[in-house]
Each structure stands twice: as structure tokens, then as C-alpha cells.
Image (tube, rainbow over all chains, first blue to last red; front, side):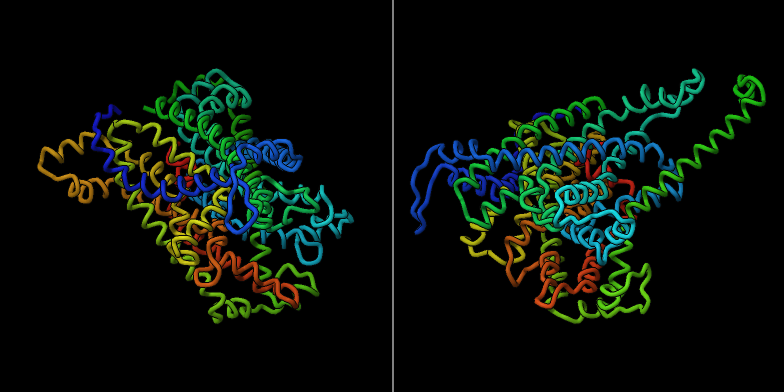
Length: 289
Length: 289
């Protein structure tokens, strides 16, 4: 759509600007402020320059958390994206069953995050949980509070349970926008199922799929509540992801300087990915217009 | 149509195709059943547990409650310490939804209709706030709202959640508004409508579904968030999600009540999900798709 140039439109966005500035810029400035200062209590602050950044960059703690975070995001993407596409391809196209599937699939997306954690915490328990009990009865040793591997499997399965539907719903929306004529043409050419997927469905889905991947990456990158409720970051530090580590540092130990430096570097990564996301979105808009 | 059927060589192939498509439908049903089963099992287990007594939960392993009890729900609904959690959550969630929509509506209109200085940068900046990890903001928010005397009030949580909900609302509404042809605006202005009257009388009814979807998502994201709402409250505005963690008393965890509380937090989402089922993907993808 051709847009008219109108500087007065600023008045319409002003409320948003003020509100988000209040809840984003002021706190962010506080963080920046802390990240360059040191304190010995009594509200006395000293200029510390970039020391905190240097310290954080050379400390194993942040790199380990980042490593675990990347591993987590990578694993869940590798499972959720193919599974989501697969589910979307198998969803009914219309009618009662399509509605039912949509409603049931959306349900996990709308559950409060700590309840998601609680559900899986219970579900995986060996004494009272269906999953833990069943595995135990089958003779598989499974204890997510003691065993690192079990803890990881639990939080990954939980995330797959929680968010695969998002990928599936987006892919489904993409699939539905493909005109019937494409499929008819493929039928006339006697294209195999794989070729239909590879040359018709996948390219047509690419845009929404990019959104789904980026959204899942971002949201998994700042995941906090669900793994925190299930494992509390343990056993040891095995499931201490970035956000969990940051909250531990900032609110648990009140190490303001390092936590702030950590926050800023965290935020810069987010900024970078947001930019990729934005570019994908605007490209998609242009294609749609 | 006659020509089309004639092109399929031989009746046997047609029959084979029919059989294959039937098989495909069956395999689709199997995939969807398995996936939905995977999604529903943990929820079923939570529901199952909420209807049992603690003795039954801990001592026997039953797939269905033997002696069905609603005592766990009664505990929650009769104890102000419990049910006020729901009231608190609802208060700040509704406040947040109203604030977000009121400021986002004009802004989304401006973004969808006009070009103005810095519009793209502003739009991108909003997106970064949707993507910002709450963990980064937890500590600064705590200090900001403490210093202005808003700590442990509903409005503090409502404002804090504006950080990600206002951008979300702006993006979703902009996505819906771009679907409304600009000629409608122009005709209305020629007919002598003022901007305010046009917006309320003509434009808002046109994007009513978009407003509904944006409201739903603001509600949802504020409802499911825990980290910020827990950090910003202690007693008076404590959300249900944070109260749930309190069931870990000295005498062990009250599993039945915990499960019942969990089930009750799923209810609001489950109630309205049917109405937004076709927009779920659009909402999660920030108004695109």
C-alpha cells in the first residue's frame, strides 16, 4: 500500500513511545549505569569502566551458560521444526476436525509457563508421575533431579510439548495459502509426494517458516520459568541456561555490576536476531503486497 | 470434468489411487492422534491428580481417581490467600490489556497509513522490546517501581508487561489494518468525518476481529508471564502463578491442591481459544502470516 507522508502521525505514536520508553529505556539505562560502576554497599558507586565486561568475557560462567543455551536452542529447533512441519502436513484441511485439532494444539501454548513447568515436574516424577512411573516400571532408570541426561531430556521434551504446535500452526497457515491449482498441476505431472513437498509446499512455506524458526529461537533463548520450575537449573549447573544464570546473579547474589554487563551482552545478541527477524518480516510484507 | 477423468489411463490405476488416498487419510489420522495424545497426556495427568486425595496420589498409582473428590478445588475457592491470587492476576492482566490496546490502536493506524520520520526505526525498536528477555529487566524494574512507590501494586505489573504487550499489540493491529483499503479512510474524510469519529465509528468496527485477537494475545502473554510479576509483587498483588509455588510447605507438597490450581490457570485460555482458533498463528507471528 502506498503510504502518505505525514509527520503529524507522530502524535498518534507518541503514547506508545512514552509508555515503552518508560518501561524499556529507563530500566535499560539503569543496567548500563550499573555495568560501568562498582559498589561497596551504602549506595556508593565508583566508576569501573569496562572492567565488568572484561571480567564477564573472561569468566567461564557466562560462556558455559551460553554454551548450554545454544545447545538447548539448537536441539529444540532441530526437533520442533521438522516435527511441526510434519504435523502441519498431516492436519485436516477443513471442517470440524480441523477446528478440533487447532483448539487442542493451541492449548499448551496458552498455559502459564510455570504451570507448564509444574505439569512436567509432576509428570516426570517416579513416584506419582505418569511418565516417570511408566519408565520406572519398564526398568529404565530415570531421575531428572539427579541425572544430567534425564534432566536435559525432560526440559527438551517439555519444550517440544509446549511449542511444537506453534511451528505447526504457522506452517499450517502457510500451507493453506497455497492455491489448489498448484496441486492439480503437480498431479498432472505425476509428481511424487516428496517432490510436491520439496518444490511446492516448502518454498511456499519458507516465509512463515522463517518466522517460526526465529520466534522459537528468540523465545527459547530467553526461556526461564519452565526449566527453572522443573530442575531449578540443576543437577549442579547442568540446566542453568542464560536467563536462569542471570537471575541467579542479579536477584540471588545481587552482583549488580557483572549481572548488568551480562544483561547488556545478552541484549545485544537479541538485538542482532531481532534485526534478522525484522528483515524477514518486511521482505514477507513486500512479497505479500 | 469428463475429459479429466478420461486422462487417467485405465480403471485399475484410478482404483489404486483411491485406495492410496484412503491409506493416506488413515495415516494422517494416526499421526494427528499420536501427536494430540502426546499433547493431552500431561494435561490429563494434571486433571486426574487434581481430582484425587493426597493419600491416593501418594500411595496408589491410578489412572482414574478412585474416590473422586473436589476438595482440592474447594480448598482454593474458599481460601482468600489462594483465590486472591486469581483476582490479582486478573486485575493486572485486564489493566495491561486495556492500556496496551488504547495506546496501540492509534499507533498501529499511524504505522499502517502514514510515512513519517523514523517510522521504520521505531517499528523495529518496538520489536526488540517484544524480544527482550524479561530476565534482563527484572532487577531494573524492581528498582524503578520501588523508587516510585509502585512496588507490589497491580499497576506496576500491568505497566511492566506493557514492555512486550504494547509492541505485540501494535504489530498485530498493524497487520490487520493494512488489510483495510485506504479508500475507506479517504471517503470518510470527504464525507466530513473528523479523525476521532471516523476511527471509532467506522474504522474500529472494520478491524473488530483484529482488536479481539490483539486483546486475546495481550491477555494471554500477561497471564502466562511469571518472572516479572513475581519480582514486582510480594503480598497485595501476588499473582496466582507465584502463589502456586507456595504449596511446598513444611509437611511436603500438597500435590492435589497444586494440580487443582494448575488446572484453574488453564481455564481462561481454554474458554476463549475456540473463538480465536483461526488467528492463533497470526497472533503468535505478530500479525504477519
